[in-house]
Length: 537
Image 1 (cartoon, one colour):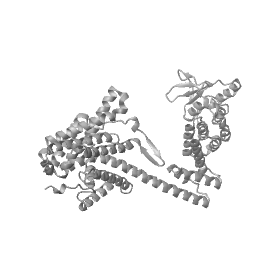
Image 2: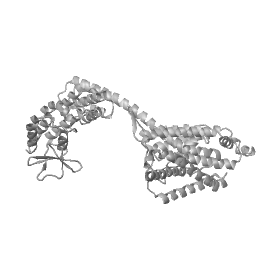
Image 3: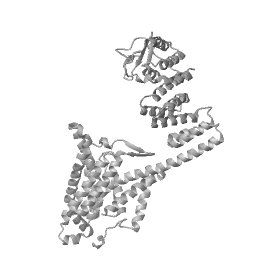
Image 4: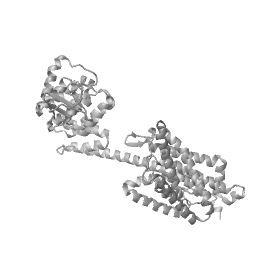
């Protein structure tokens, strides 16, 4: 067994970490270096272990690639030669690192047994823990934390004694604590200290490590373990609730984008537009087309693809909406059942048209760099794409409020919403308002499609996933009321995500549907009913 002697020598790795530089081996090391490669050729587990020990003791410049190759079965030896086989199939001389044109004949992989694997893993752990880069040291310490390899404890303690970086030092303390929790012959005081470190870490990995306490622990240790586990579980439950709340806000923003256009058309025109989901789908496919054009013509503009797609999606969906209103819906006012059936048929036509043009399979829509990745705040993971969608939903909502409150068309839309006949008698061209309103609602649905393309599959059936939820949001919040739509979307989104862990996704949706049915029995006009609609006959 050469593990203790190997571990005591790992502190000599400082010069080894300059292996990428052209280092000349002093002549005094020539004899030990020859001995290293002779031992690697000996086809003996004990000799190979001594060779690994010597690689570290002499600070051989090729120690890192040799030990890595040995651990992965890529170190070849025979006839006095030792060759490292690269992961890409290339070959290099283990002594110098110089590439070879071909593998020399008669070489065989250097054999490993369990003890030798522990030796190589200890050496690799030492190489990582003594890396000059603090981030690499922290990553190596985290790997040791997960492995809980007791043979690495001296290396961890030696690295901890000289560590100055706060993050790497914390990772090393956690790695030390993980080993002390499972290592035999550890004093109760050391185990208590390890439990405190794990309690401070407080994640699932720390919880699993705490539960690995040996069964022969003293009652005091078991009591301390139970307290630490209870505290971590309580903390994780709070983080899970916060995560579900974040998911609810994210879902609520998606529902707001999908429903806000429907709230406008449904509120002003009283039209049950079953083709609203297809406006969302058209916005998503517009984004796909824009990205395909940018990929083929100007790939350096890809991060700006959504900026180009937003106005185009609004125009495409808005123009299609105006065409539907002028071509079909204006002949069906006052006949809600016929309107529902007509728009449902239009939705099928649009789905089949897109399926014919683009195929039935999902289409890839990429995310710009600023929408990729995530940030962690404690135990809360926030993805950038969801965060940007929440911001975008808020901007769309504010823009629609400004249009309704500050523009002439907004004033006319509110007048028609409150009393269509009176607005017509006052000279407002209600037909024009209907067309522009339908176009605005459809255009906003197209904007929703751009956002949804970043988090959902772009397919001909995209809109069908949101049409029912959109109607639920509009009915619950109050038909034609934007503030009601906002409150309804956020309420249903958060409630849905909070119910999922307990009732499941399907049962949770059913529960919300039953709640809305019961709610509209008491408040048929939703949370925020518009004043003046009852005046109409």
